[in-house]
Image (cartoon, rainbow, N blue to C red; front, side, top):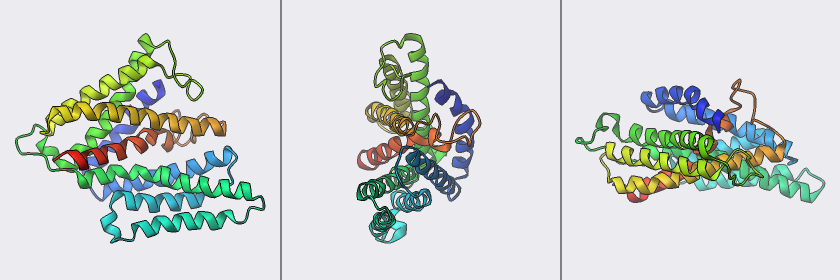
Length: 275
């Protein structure tokens, strides 16, 4: 958790710069993240014993990401594109002589594609987010930048709160078989920090604070689940990091794992409840 909190100081500023530039630069950055994270996922799955084809996971993740980010761009062909991913993964698995190995490879390749492709929900959030009222404190950010920035800050605040409270009070561990550094006090600290930032963010965006109070814990839990999900994959593969791409900080998947779960939750919440 210490590495996650400190690495945000390295990872978040470039992300904020690209966010300030807007589209198509932010979408291009997310697409680049999807490519690298999908490749790392394929390598981890091979390390865990699955006969997957990493480049097929990359292609599938991009297809899923395109549909998740902006299905209107695909003019109704998004579902067929995802179906093509499932078909291609199934065909690739047919070369395995052991049908159990082939079936596992089919499922793993499909999973890897969908899993990483969910990161594109950050782009979807920006496109679906409501405009910021002219009277709101954050009106100059605009709806797209404002809502994406809020989710970035929520994930960062959860990691930071969980780290500092966990260091100070965390003794009783939870889900230690996946990640031995997690504690119940850390979870509580992260949720409190995430909820406080969410309430403040909704106020700044001119929205009811109560909606922010509800979203905060949801994003906090989703962020933690995303972190644990990738930790489970790394533990299965016997790997410490998803790759050594970022010296001292692991790979891209290590940096975006929380967003893979948190972004779809935020996009759905905002699209359904925020006006």
